[in-house]
Image (cartoon, rainbow, N blue to C red; front, side, top):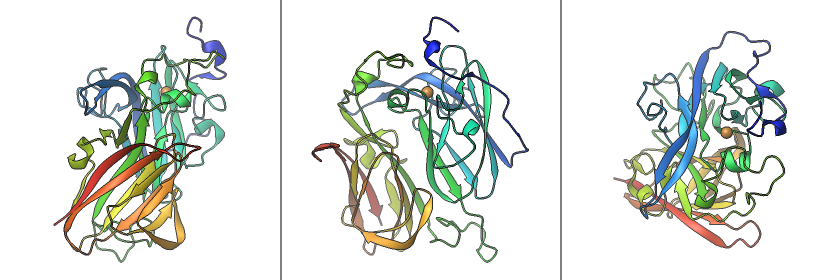
Length: 331
Ligand SMILES: [Cu+2]
């Protein structure tokens, strides 16, 4: 335990999970720290994230034999009421955790470094219950200003239990909530490439490595550059038929406040942070701060191409620091 700055870590290890029970569904995550994202200006930025150890080696989700993985990390999707195990395996070079953001498990299973275990040289199984259907995300909580910035996050969706009266395949935002046909998960984030060259423990032992000196150059939606690629990327842009209903799961995955507008379309905001709102709220824009999620039902009444804009705002001045764009195409 020497030579890597572990002295500043309080609970490094991979202990047995207290009170482990049989899971209804399990996920197995590893990590990669050698991914890269190609930006629209032709430059690449180093990305870290989680791999899916159950996926085939060589696939993006499984990491390309240790050479990177998907960004964002593979989603965790479960059904309300399930007991979930998320195992995280980390070697002896770094420490990482998984924090299931918005889920409220026991302290040991919360994945917040310095309050629970910093996973090191083994596997820890996070045990939690999917209590409330909605939109969440999971992320590493070791040296969070750096590890979250590096890309160590993925979507976390809890679907409601199907109603006995619903036809098979019916998709609802939450239990008894609105039905949707098309789903988008927009995790909006900003990237400062100057931070993407640091070591995993940079700044954690009291040194000032400039983590507060945050000047993002790229503005992205779900791992795709919002300068132009996200306009048409099939994993980001929404394609729907007139008459269909879209559920946009909007996640403010960056550090700065954001403002999203739906290209003139009106959204009915039905849930926030994994909880249904007492009454849906109709709006053409939403302002969100770090880690907030909003579930938006959009039902266009005319065909067309609607350009969705996400503005990234300075904490204090509110100045627009950058913009990411995608589209809702209605045919
Ligand atoms: Cu980490």
